[in-house]
Length: 316
Image (cartoon, rainbow, N blue to C red; front, side, top):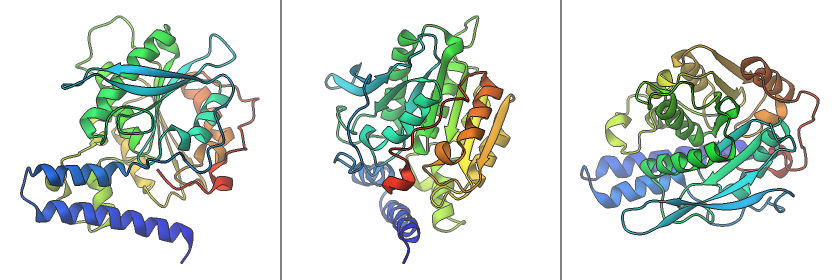
């Protein structure tokens, strides 16, 4: 059995186990919700095997988070661009891997000309906490956004980027700070939103990997309902997906694109997988950033040293 098929099968088993546990349990049972969160986030506690150290210039930060019972923190990396006037992106990762497993993509985003603030949600890496939830990752993203505002005072140079499950977190954050319920302000608080390899909702992913008739919306407590939120985002949106993604069907990005407001752009990277669209579609990615947002340096090549293909990085 080939590696991609094995990984797809494992992911199917995760989702099937998740839904079976919930379906067999009593509604509102705390232990079942914990198991659901474990299977949703699938946190790997070890440093990623392909991590070979932090690039020069990356600064480590701890961002305070108000928790009900005690003070907690979100661990972050801040990697400023060489250009002091560069745009800054808040990087929100997906499930499984902490920041040590994200560096290849952070490097590529940095090579596009961005300063990057990347965080580990509570329960990941060096951040506080034991197990994330949909509510806590949204809180962590908000705290990180507040720090990005300090690091990049110009709202026209601020971006939010989310990969896979992090795309759902990014959409939620962008909707809150730019949507109809956002505080009144003269200008938009950010220039744009970038969502890569993501999905419409966790229920849709569950059905895609099991059976289409499953009432997943009712069974799941963790919703991550991006398709209903993205229409509230009132800044330009770039949605990217690899045509060869074996974990999240590319059609979900088409549905997100259809639901988003203009201006928007859908970049389907031919042959791209769940992890490598920045590398495989490097020129197209840069062109989309330039055309939609007016940012990026098309002359700088993307780093290859830690590419997902070479390192055989498992999907997030």
